[in-house]
Length: 195
Ligand code: IMP
Image (spheres, rainbow, N blue to C red):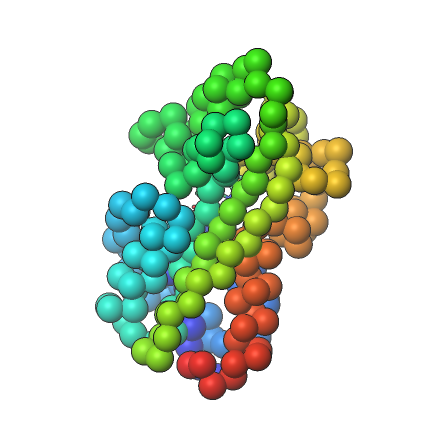
């Protein structure tokens, strides 16, 4: 079974991907004892996803998968976008980020937004990127206790509950990450010689 390195410190992302890629032995940065922070200096999700993949590929080689995600709000010209994690400044704080977002949207009638993920797949042969999106709207106040980040203020299209109110199992099947991972998995299944 081939190794696939997932360029993340997040064990939940690793579990999500492991379950969808039974043909690979998925390793995380923790498994490789790589605890350094990878700088996220690019102006967009594509760039940061690429930086993460490149950093790990140059160190370990093999097959690398990296991702970067953010919330893009129409009335804010796509903000917080690539700055989602630290929208309200350092250190990262989900509650302050959400408050800043709700404040920026006060009096805005257009509440449309989307979560977007860009996954980078890198091997010696080729580099590919896969996008995943989930569209929705931003509530006027937080609802629900599950999830993380902007989940309590994001209601996905077709639902009347926020990401923090629906089950995590359901969220993980419709999320931006899930949509990007499905595209990655479809590509790997269609191109078994890619790696
Ligand atoms: P990451 O690239 O997955 O670490 O995501 C960057 C930031 O985007 C997070 O720190 C959150 O603020 C936000 N974000 C990404 N995905 C989600 C999600 O599924 N729910 C809520 N917030 C998210």
